[in-house]
Length: 382
Image 1 (cartoon, helix red, strand yellow):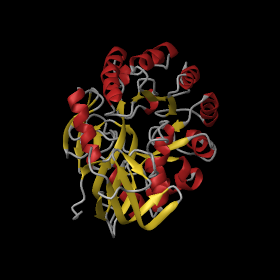
Image 2 (cartoon, one colour; image 1 turned 30 degrees about the horizontal axis):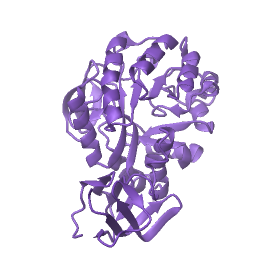
Image 3 (cartoon, rainbow, N blue to C red; image 1 turned 180 degrees about the vertical axis):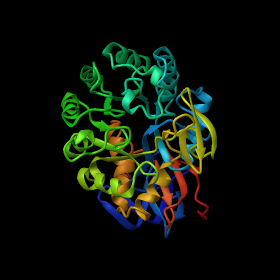
Image 4 (cartoon, rainbow, N blue to C red; image 1 turned 90 degrees about the horizontal axis):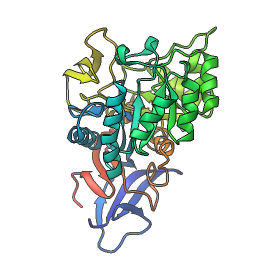
């Protein structure tokens, strides 16, 4: 077991607020109340210590895909995101043949069982061809509850979320089925009306998949799904804060109406995250990444992002002007709550996993700890 550690002198963001000149004690894999005499002390004056980031929606990174890669590729992508502060990650699949998705879910379930990922998110194939984004239209299908159940079963208890166009035939019944099995029903890639979206929420939907993206725009006579999702207290809205998917004013609109307690920052990352420009595959579709922006080769639709959550955090504070405490809520506490893991992760409290990120004064990552072990150790004398 690694020696106990004391992270001292930093601005520590706790559920109750930020503590200047604070300290976090790590004993084994957990955060502790008090440090033993032989604990290593890290002087983190001038730095921030925040909870490890939790990503609900992520398709890959480091040149590796969660949507189609083997276990080795998935672990490579997971490690890439850990280097950027994401200590808990849900692996997202994309639209594909149903049998392939079921087989792939079985492999991902093994990684979830080992603790390498926090579960599986199925984004497609039960989405609208009108709002397909970077999904293969030939593989889309209406959300048949029997097929939804097939994917849930294939995940062996590790299905965490499924994105649906709930206005399609079978959509509401599928939402109810997901809810009965403890799987988050997320409204996304949808062409639903305002009224149809309210029906989905009443049926049990609790998340908006990347709000604003892949859904009808807000209209003053036809308010559409965005209005319904923003105004309902039962919904947490995902936001991709990379400067490409959302105008800063749209992000501010979401925060103003939903509040920090109902926002979850996600990456929607694909293989190029933490890797670089070039040609990639997202499911069966070819993607070109130029200057960090991923688009389909055919059609030009945005195809996920190359975002890592440390960049989303820094942008939220330095560009969008959000309070650090609100960003921590959106990037750690809220996704942990949605995953049912708030008793273990998402905040810096005694007894919880020692998952944390050390940021410098400019909000760049200089340290990442997961379950008490440094993934990125601060270059400071202990």
